[in-house]
Picture 1 (cartoon, helix red, strand yellow):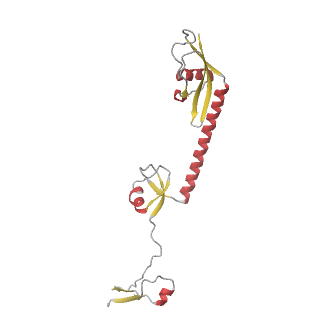
Picture 2 (picture 1 turned 135 degrees about the vertical axis):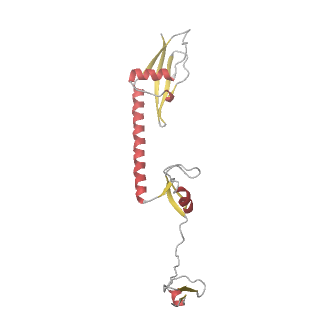
Picture 3 (picture 1 turned 45 degrees about the vertical axis):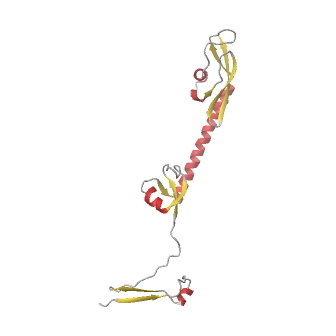
Length: 198
């Protein structure tokens, strides 16, 4: 079987049809022994150099879990995807992310509302009374601590409060003081504490 030689050439009529002119005429010859024809493919677009991805976990120097970012295609293909650290963003994934963000925002709003209600309860109670052994004048033995206030709140209101959210001034005398309860980063309750000697 004789080999078939196919000659492809660019003519002025081909260039006029919208194909790019590559500097005159281009001639390629393809030799096939089994009778197939050659086709020239001209790429019109450049390959994507970056990918829009979502991170599945924290990646140092790149971003936090759930963050949408653009990365180079090779970095995604060779490192992030095989290691299971990221995935390509799809419309379905974007919708799921939006639903999850709405759920998280609703949860944050609910927590703030609960903290505000609890602050209102604490502020309307009046003053919490603390008894201490009296000394000379207005002096008391020892100090009133955050744990003391937590115990009093537990006894009077049946509410558990972490002592780390209680901020008291230094109390070494009888009198009325203001304590702050940091129930949420955005909600602080101010309560009165009456210290008296027994």
